[in-house]
Length: 359
Image (cartoon, rainbow, N blue to C red; front, side, top):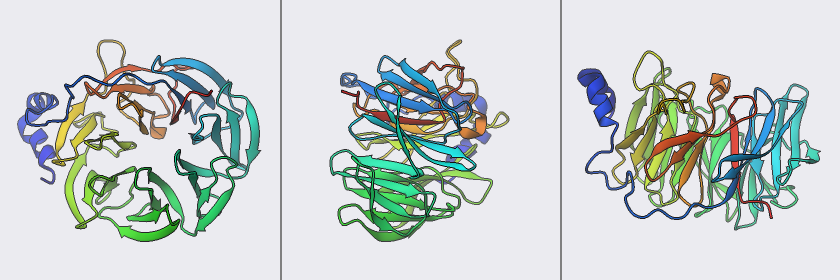
């Protein structure tokens, strides 16, 4: 069904497109009609590259707990599995490294030179670090953060499957190769060549052994691809208006979310696409939130995080939009943006992390 939706948009016009945005009748998974599970309590941490503001939020109240302004720009924030520490990356010239903050009150605990992306599995006693300084992938101890096993591959970003203990790292520069690492034996087991170029966001479905990712094929045409690793075939290739800066899969593995940076001149302008993981077809399109004044300021979204209770998704701002978009809150039952998070200066977080409430 390659480009099927794009052809529909062009041939049937705006009215049919708006009609399509509602959930399709034969889609069993969106929105969910059964009684939702209770809302869990978490902490969300956000950092804005543009103003250096680090903020902690109480979830699901979605209120600010603490905030602090940093004397540098930061591209990323990560939280340790115990929920006690935040790893904040310093991203300025001659000042690359990592600062460690208390998740309780955002006080500075220490600093290291371990600059990169961090991924943690809270149950198996390991973490993954994609080092940007020496171009390697490391396993790290989640307590002392010391690097241990080394895989000499340069990963740009990735996805940690915490059920099957597989890590998928996108080769840097992100052309079309993904490294698959078995975290049980801590070894590289495959280098997967995928259709498309400049792969950005990626997530994995351990139920079906499928990869979902955003790419160009070719540039400047943006696509979201669902790929079967068993048969090495494309299951669905959906053309988007703009590139996607966020992709995530629900806890149940039944739906995939991918945002669309959109365009002011072309449909769809920054909608969030929801795919049915069983049929691999578009199930729903989430509007970029207007609802008469609670508006998102620009149709562009970034990183997507799902809460472990399966109730909400939080969507960060895109770096390319100068963080004008606040962090959006999606109700996963209705599959709608229900509100935005407050911020200190009106900027949204360009990087977000989710963890347990510090004890």
